[in-house]
Length: 310
Length: 249
Ligand SMILES: Cc1ncc(C[n+]2csc(CCOP(=O)(O)OP(=O)(O)O)c2C)c(N)n1
Ligand SMILES: [Mg+2]
Image (cartoon, rainbow over all chains, first blue to last red):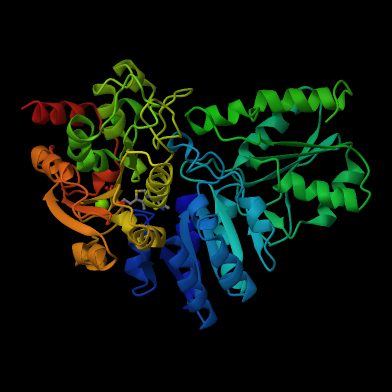
């Protein structure tokens, strides 16, 4: 997704001379071409995330469209008050880019995992939260963020995230994408776990369960119309995210569902409320949290059969 | 470890390994058989990404068997690419997000004062890390609190993860001095020089001590020295063979 981000950013920068990139010492080599093509519009501020966000806010308040890039926990939590006050309070046109959502930085350990960023960014007034599901979505999300003119949090994976969308998609902020259609249940996915959601749907289909898959790439604002349609047209909503079950996509949909008397059950798949106690790859850490195609499809099948409740 | 675990940060580990050897083998008052002794000296590797050097030094010093090093970056293992709190004996706190070690170390040194304990606290930082404001917040705090039990050792290799650091850091020693620290500079790869400087802390009573250690990123392996590539690249079989050949002479 990193490479797709850079492609999207270059395209946005060609269209809009206000677009620029700040990094806090992350992205070795990947921005060399960008820096060459857009002199003066790439800046490494050093390992100083709080400063980066403050500087980005200042740039935005005086007419630029900065993107501020770091590993997701450092781009969000480290400089949270700068994001809240300098960016969100001022409605500054800053896009904060968190690379390595969820367990993308698996063996680096919990300091590098990002399982709370959606929750925290979602709570900020004026913030739009984008978690594109594959490189195709990422590339377009960058353009949408640049054009948005308001605070955006853009959460991406790392390298090697598989492509889900064959051909192009129409990425619109706040409009979920339907990746698979089906009438038995809906699996709403956000961010880099989308490939797993699609595989789950394919596996369930082999068991005659037709599972619709939505890429809810915008967690805030939620696409309530799409959710309502799914709630009415399918028997159950499931959410999946590589993020804590507290405060993320599942929480957001649960809040919406509770407040809007939405019919049908809702079940959440996501990370447990704990720091990883052992190290391991992204796949391994997903597995510890039940986020595998096997476990999720079994669980969905059992729930639809009424064998277990959510 | 980096070869087996396919991890980056070899250059970072080689940059600080001599500092850690001096600390663990000559300076720190620690007993590997009593890793939780309340009076032990504390060492925080604030540049947590250099932890391969720390894991290796701790194993060599007897804090845990060398076989545990195989758990590095392995599924289900205890040793992540950045250390977790007490993930193995000898690791005092989690680091990995830069800019956390010095404030925590200051807190530990303050606790020693408040409790009348005799242990000392050593924090190893990197120069890129010194872009973080939190480093300088602690740097302001420690002299005001007269934390002479606190020593900051900066691994000044002149590189962050993407660029040179001199422009921002220099004059480095003067910066620390201006904040109220007692400062010495040393060749960070001369283990006995490092050990003798460290033996002299606190340099001045009532003041925290700072040591600017001149280092080389990737020190000891000619093709890794001063080359940012080795902040990232896991060594392959051939790299490993050549590196071991150079190190063992
Ligand atoms: C808060 C934070 N931001 C970014 C990073 C990513 N990162 C890891 S090492 C590094 C910089 C490396 O340079 P330096 O700090 O000088 O360490 P060296 O390897 O040179 O000893 C960066 C930016 C991080 N670990 N923590
Ligand atoms: Mg350095």
